[in-house]
Image (tube, rainbow, N blue to C red):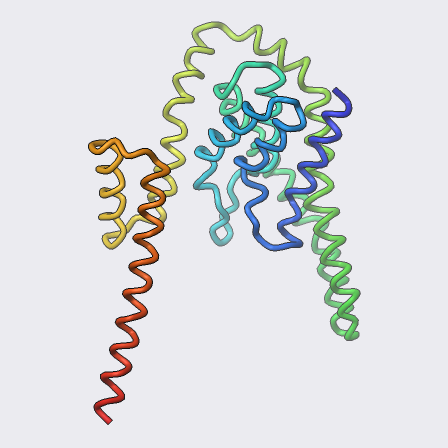
Length: 255
């Protein structure tokens, strides 16, 4: 149990390195769920839970000053508790959002209270022309404020929380557990709806309807639809490039 808790904490620290290496989507639940499953000896369940949680958090992205619940702690601890208790995706979904929302408060306090210290130190280094010092502040600030707290909280919460979670789940009435199972069926649809609300427009709606028709009426699997969509995207990009070249040639002929 202790080794698993430490490894889960290391996963939380490692996937948070997006602040250092750039956005690589390593912090998404579909990745963290797989890593948690690997650590806990149940890779298949980890992949399933990660994919399920990804559908819930798929619309959770930072837009301006609006910061969504923390997908890292929610995805990692949700999957870890679900695997350790053997209760499946319904428990992962029930725990992920409360955990993610709670850590969002912690992250905001750390970001507003501690990170400015590193920022001011970086400003001082820049004024002196010491860009190596500025880089050190960037790395150190991200590690202290973003990576280390997540690792500690995930490790401690999993180590102390599994026995408690077992007792809590055993005390939950059967009708409540049935409700969680039912909620697990429509919560992923909510994640898709949140994403669709951000990306759908009059120009893109036709592609959404086309994909729905292919799946619902022609029974084409999702992988086939994704392959067709990728080919269609390449064709549209090539057509736009050809049209731009044609317009430029016409303009050159006018002169």
